[in-house]
Length: 136
Image 1 (spheres, rainbow, N blue to C red):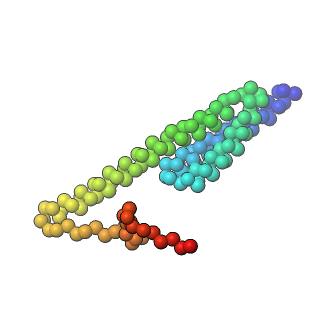
Image 2 (cartoon, rainbow, N blue to C red):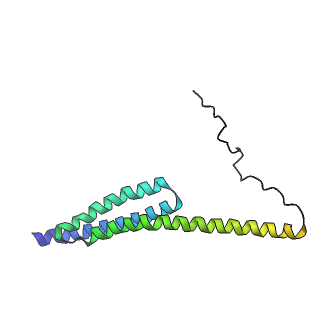
Image 3 (cartoon, one colour):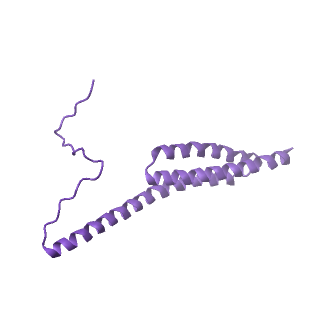
């Protein structure tokens, strides 16, 4: 009887580990991009995959669960690092673009034009002393 159950539970556990690893990858990508809703959904489905991977433990096979748990831990470690790297690359690009724009105008002696605000950002920034009216 034990061998029969092992032949059923181990493939279910491996399939659960595969689902959990795929969801951990989705979660890592979502956390790196700052999409909290997608990250929450990925973790929610990861829980289902991790529970399925526990079914292999009935046949004394713990490796699928360890793989599933390790995938989520790796996602939580790699995602913030990827987010910092992504932000650093973007800052370097915008810094290089600003330096490239400033170089020709500085050489010609012409005054630099004031940068226009970003599209969709027509609302001026608030100071700490500004009041905000709230509809009641």
